[in-house]
Length: 231
Length: 231
Picture 1 (cartoon, rainbow over the protein chains, first blue to last red):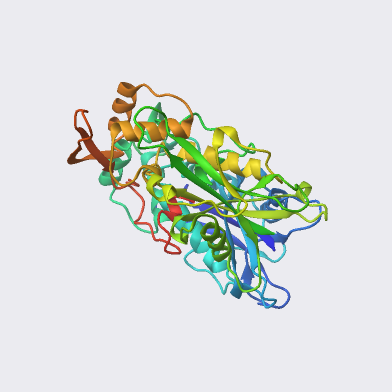
Picture 2: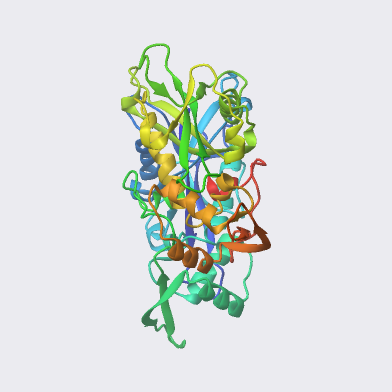
């Protein structure tokens, strides 16, 4: 039984000419089983260590980042996972890292970052966990401000569209995206513009306070941001 | 390590004169620790049994209902939970049961249903798990069709308001609720009306297809309904 952490970072958001890429750090297995394959960063549960602390250790040792990026994603376990017959349980966490933070991340020993569309041979059932995380983020960008964690607090429509394109892994039509995202009411203009190079200055936006119109104000359970809405 | 199941049912939706009540079944502890206290239905992980199957067993033995109501809620574990020092991990599932189904539920041995505003002394950290489930449902009714699982597929605005009131544990102003829920676009009229007794017939509504306007069509991971959006 242990925790596994899916860390997603967006690479290349500052390039205007190419779609940014979602990347994930994996750890090379240096023992059996799955020797030489790549696994999610993680750690076994140990005496006196909470689930959150175990996940936080794995995130820190892989990226140097702290626990405030972590959320529990899902717990995986089935009878087939372990040779002992008892279910092997992985409590999966995920962390979405914005581009600037990811740029400062150095590669640790046995850790390598892979683009999600070119993953190596994956150990255990970790491919399933990665796919689950991708599916979750693809669903959640439609109704939460989760993309803001990858693109930053303020962004142009074109920057946001590129984040959507990277997450959905397909090209979006700019006028359609603009109309659709503005109609959703999810984002609002900051009143500022971004001027860059010879381009026409572009209006900056931010996510509006996420609306849960008829529910009570949500409490946070454990101080992590967005815990409830994204958990 | 085991699974625990939070089963929420709405009682009294057919009475026009009183707010319905959220109720939960609990199991009386017949051994130490917490002898005589009340715990969530659950089971320990066993050889050859998946997490889902363990949760499904607990739901079935408590309510006679099958696994299609179950979703994983959250995994709880901290160093303080076990005397052994190793984290005691509870993988919590929840099931939202609609009123008609709950009416057919008989009380099993050592199982008793409690209104959520009058819970008995709760064993382990199960109170925290119940509170987490309540907090989750209070957040989710604002942006998902989760209430439909308690009120049924079609409903009048007044029936839906009572479900909201039961979940939020407070009275809502009918005209405000009507305006707010209709403006949200979350529900749409079915074109039919409900005529009951001497009351004026009331229009019936259903939840519109939940909108995730810019995300890709969501896949289901394991065949359970709404798994992703509600997990």
